Image (cartoon, rainbow, N blue to C red; front, side):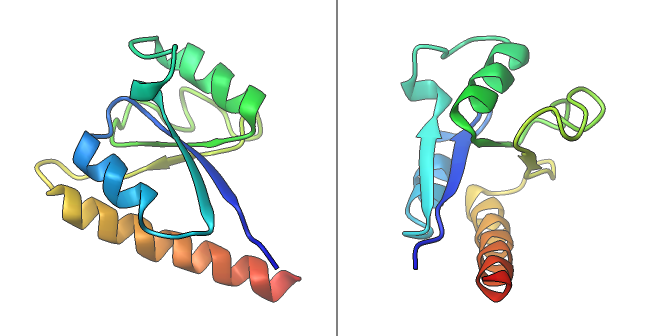
Length: 109
């Protein structure tokens, strides 16, 4: 059984955090905006790409949220917020979140 969580890391995610997220689990498939032709694009372009590729956006930017992009108009947004938090703290939060999501998916199967 393979659970594959498809993510798009927003440009607001630092390179260090992107690496930590990418290495956090074999059950996730990560693309990083900084490595794509949409680098430097507005949030709307990033969200359009996420919709086309069926990817959940991961960001540290609190402006990219359910108010800006209403629920059910995209695969999802994960906001790792908290001012002045070290990448390792954000990575730990993300890892715990993914572990819970993957476990719930396994229980549903």
